[in-house]
Amino acid sequence: MGISLKEALEKAGMKASKRENERPKVEKAKQTETTKHQQMHDFCDACQRGMPDVEFYKHNNPCVDAQWLCLSCADKNSISDDCRTTNQSEYSRRGIFRREYGPTKKFGPQGYGNRR
Image (cartoon, rainbow, N blue to C red; front, side, top):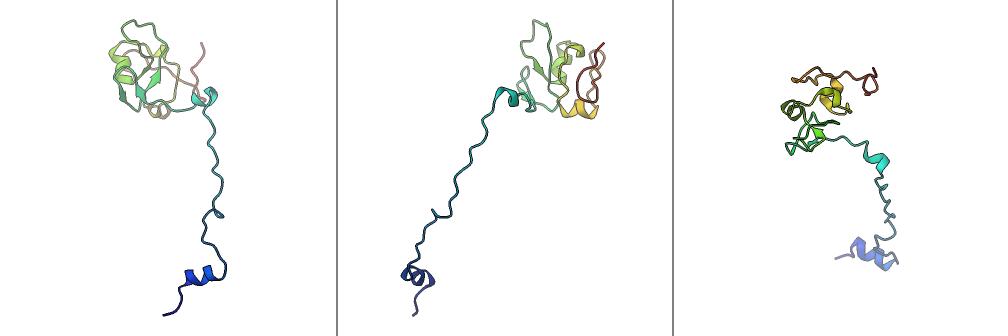
């Protein structure tokens, strides 16, 4: 039988090496504090579950240590929507974020709260 293609190439002086085709790996950019705040937060610290309606509340309720709260935990613990500082969840961006406890805070087109 004849010589295989691999044997013929080796006989001609070609080397089977993948090192010639390897490229240096590009390192990912390290996450800094300035980029960390741009990630979407979807974990409620009060009920310890991933929820689609988690927002950051600056509240003074001593019964709740968490500040990233889902809609139901904020309603359950009677935290006013005026304490909400973010507009980052899908529910609030689409306009379907509705509170049962008190009025819902309106955010401007950029996602910041209205200044009074």
